[in-house]
Length: 225
Image 1 (cartoon, one colour):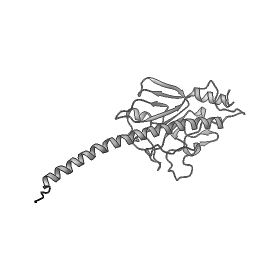
Image 2 (cartoon, rainbow, N blue to C red; image 1 turned 120 degrees about the vertical axis):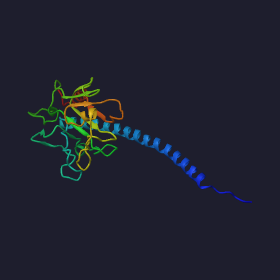
Image 3 (spheres, rainbow, N blue to C red; image 1 turned 180 degrees about the horizontal axis):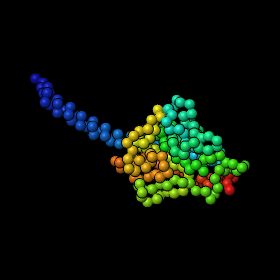
Image 4 (cartoon, rainbow, N blue to C red; image 1 turned 90 degrees about the vertical axis):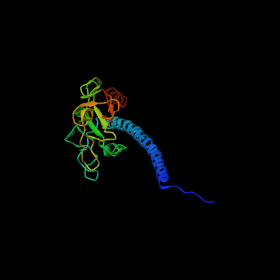
């Protein structure tokens, strides 16, 4: 009995179908990985927020940012940039070594960290806290650049620049260029930030220290009033 084999045309069609099926499987897998990394980032941000509050309870102040341009292996990387009891910079990267948290988000980018100076200075005159119950932070979060205010009087904020990483610093100390519009608002080292629904032009994730939660924890720890 004669056995008929595949022709080249049939083989090409079969390979094309297999490639198409593999492509259909790979796209959802990539999407699943992005969703998982976003969830992991949010969990890390929650831990970072608690670490910041814990630092304040232990030290009577929030930490200063770390110098963003230092490579991970450089002296002083991940530690507070401060001198004379005050922050040298108020916007940089999260001082991961001082807080005992991850240096980078799941995409391998450092977290941007901004703090209100008055909340990070050393307490003076025997005070147990550098700030009072009546003090307010200077950071504002909006729904878009120039949009509705969704958070104000914030003493400290942390940003993951998401999958695209635009505006973030990397472990070698370089900053990824290209942040624009609302993402630029989270990367320009000022006190105005944007938190909104993700879209092709925006994939940042943020967390911030609520002034009310921070002060409540300080009161409970007998650091205030």
